[in-house]
Image (cartoon, rainbow, N blue to C red; front, side, top):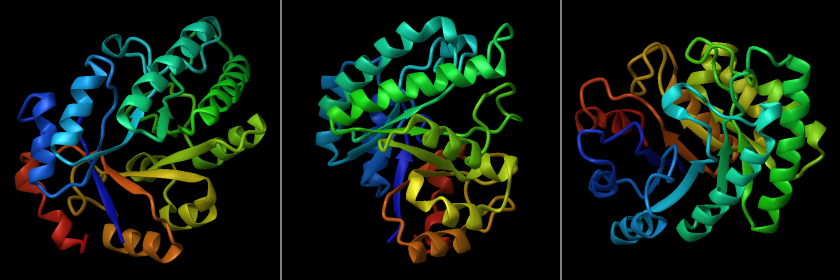
Length: 259
């Protein structure tokens, strides 16, 4: 069975953020995800989840100065303490919101940092974070991102993510597999998902080009949904796309794809 979670950062932007929980529930979603909870009190978010009978399946670790263009700091050698402070903050929110998986955006490599130094820093930070999160019953995810949308992002491919996980030696790090990003970077979606299924902790979707709803681009989502079901993937699939003509107007893609 395909389980869809509405990404409230991307969907229902027609209304203020805290009102998106109700909008998602009205549209039939049973779960949600979003980038960051930190601008809000955890108690306020928890109330919205409870009132609308929604499960929060994912949010990200703090990712630096987002408005200034930062997309994570886990690979920044001079910001290790900031990263680890962020892990503690994320745990506090996750425990109050019932979240069992946290995603780490690893970041854009600073101009004055070598790829080797970024790699060493990332592996060290992930190892430490995974251990702390495991003690709290929370899984850590890392997400490969395409470099067309975010030039200079360090983690860009599924195989690279798998190798980094192996290097950490942790059994508490998994891949957030974003179909849109990986279509742009490597293609071979079905075979890559199958080969890495044991490492995939969460899936996200959008079509390409445009990052809009399934059915607006080149990705055969009906086939991918059937493949995920056949492979036994039982996690959530986050709908992290940009509605082409309004959120509710575009939601008929679900019925058209049998989900």
